[in-house]
Length: 352
Length: 277
Image: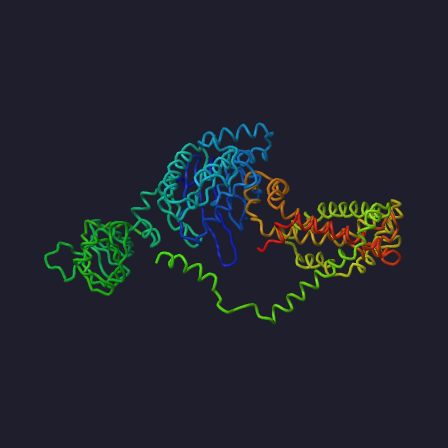
């Protein structure tokens, strides 16, 4: 959260141009921080990671780690460890030799490297699999070997590219919890790239949201979840988000209608409310206390957990979550006209 | 009823193309082609002087030629490996101006008549050659018409096979393993030696066998550049050619030996090439 680059930790301004794509992001982190780069596919997250590792050259900008300039340092000389998305464990080496590879390359003799590798694998709970070749490891085990291999060189910057993407849903839950523990123990800077908001929020202390090669928002996960500033993040955290101009307890939205809020603001503002706060009516409600009432039309229905998400267009495009019973009682179908209401107390306005 | 349900898929499989045999227009040329490849080899076996064969094969001249062939082909293969694998790596993993031209030049000896290769080698490494002159003057090294010349001629024609084969394997291998090695502190050479080379080893081995077989059968460049001196530069193919003119029975015997070696090589590679991909 520091605005001034700390002498310790990561201080980077990454500019990478490739064809028409331009990545231009600033990234700072103190030792012990876990930063998640969150963004849709093609946003430039992996390019940023590759630039930090030295695998993609910087077009411009700076890269300092613990005060040392790394912008022109080749990857093999950077104190950086990488856990690749599909791990890239060397298929011809055992788990032990995979982990010992780094220490060997950084000058340790064979037995010393193996001793260190064995210690790392034991720490990862893999003592029984040291002699196994990667193809004999399960997804979760391979992930831990990859983490051990990256950590065995004592990096000052640990990079993780979609660390959980290659795992099935059940393994993922378990590995996520383990990874969180290992990241908490890691004393230097960790940067992970993910398009999964849950991974990002569970694993990271700070989120940096990247879209189209730029940082669109950064902060603590809870802040970002509560105050999304782009459509993409709002969708990720499951909120209806609008931009407008606040005047007292009313925000006139850029989309047209006004929204009454409890907050008292003035100037450019965001208004957000969860889909669960929306109530739908077939006919215009008369006795409703909700002051925010819009005429809409059902654009689509989709099951969403144990609820049904109703996508609405019309005066105000929004998403509403209803129970299956409510959907049946209202007789909702694509194209059906409805009235959507949200109580002012359920909305949340904040300065843009 | 249950048996019908079981029969249906099997029947469907068998009569997948009902009444659709192989058209004669394709079958006839295919069989002619097959016969064309096999009949000469069969003739070699049928006409072999089986009774005299033990005597033929134990003559010192045959053994000299065979020994020379094996030594030269193996040395040429080793030489090809030493320079060919790095060359393949350069072509597959680096980007430099004129790379596609370099690749075209590397493959040129594949299509070049070997005799032309031999003439070119003479002009380069001959006693008055572009390079050979200096080798002779400075080091007193003469290459044409020596066993070393045989090795060079065979390397010249075998090297492209190895380079093309290894380059293909390298291109198919995931370059990100090298990146992973780099992030672990491996220099590009260490990454090549400890990660890439073990991963492409099967491809390198296959390329080496291909190069070895090509070197073993090499005739045109060898006879042009190294001549035909028994015990020194007369390899098996040269001995076969010479024998055919004054002792056809010996030529057949020598040919049988080469055929046997080729079949053995093919058997060794059956997993890689004779299995449809």
